[in-house]
Image (cartoon, rainbow, N blue to C red; front, side, top):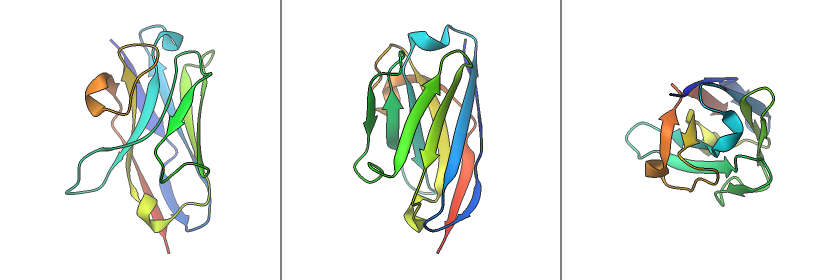
Length: 124
């Protein structure tokens, strides 16, 4: 069993920066990929980024590429999402998720473990 706890959300102005953290406990952290997803009311949960278990492979959805950076510190059992040049359309509840294997995917269904979410609000 894995428990994920996000932190770092809040209110930020457009063009600003925010860093989300997700602390994991339970299963060996470096053995599974981690992802970040986001969701706004009335819409499906949307994939944002993922990182392999070892941390060497990262992928991003097109709308955040070049602005967001996913990273992980396996010694601290923590994954991060650095959000730069944020836009009002980045406003959402952000969730971290743990995959069943070391590489993950962009699909919600490929993730077994989920955090409770943290709200990010970008003002214009």
